[in-house]
Length: 334
Ligand code: AMP
Ligand code: MG
Image (cartoon, rainbow, N blue to C red; front, side, top):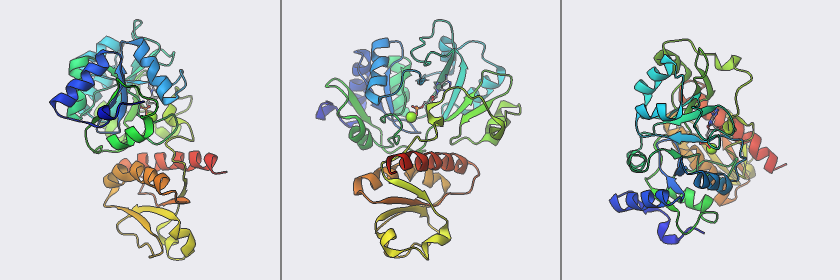
């Protein structure tokens, strides 16, 4: 059980020092990043990395993302790095981008889920950077139990994992995540980049920066194992249902009353709806998406009624996460 005094440690000098000490001692840290909170372990400590899998209930063949503090650290983990991957790192790091690269022979296969590829990211959150600078590379998948909603606040990490963390583990409170959904994952192991998971950085930007046409997402097949690509991932316990903006007008009042509605400011939602969350734009939508899912579970409403943003820019990633949440929640609410 997480010691209460180690839950939500503020992101000041002493909080960072506690997080660093915990990681050096082989402990786990709930780490703020700009995408979602990670559950971090020293990437070079196999026992600590194993605990990440146990705490999350994550199958051992699902690889972790290794977070580094400097672009030059790429070479400590990856080999045969194509020029376009360097271009992506130079332009888009620090930031919500994960590069999948050929793993060096001495890179632990515990991190790669047994594969010969390693996922690397340089996060933009200043506290994450500060911690990694002091500890060295950290393996950090999202700080949720396997298949569930990624946490976007320190409180959500505590709610999700307090029971499976230890006395010596720490949750560092870096505030609400500014992006709110997971990084764009780009496979850089072939001649052309290929997006494995959409995110804040859209396909057009990735191709543009890479300076080479990527494998179109629609044509991608035989993709490597990416846990975020399972059909039912990122799911709350509450059933998630996609609706059209016009659907609200004719909707049964009782249905609205027992739902949490997540939509945009321009959509009119009739008054029987007690719980309404409205996003200003697509970026705001991404920021509040997982908080809305968590709130629905806390409120024990019957449904999340969600409209989807246009399928451009970050909208593609939002639709991807909503689609998986619909699928995953349908399994829990047969
Ligand atoms: P998360 O647990 O949300 O941080 O997710 C990490 C994501 O990165 C998962 O979807 C992983 O499967 C994916 N990932 C990590 N390493 C690799 C790799 N070597 N090849 C493909 N995907 C990877
Ligand atoms: Mg995850």
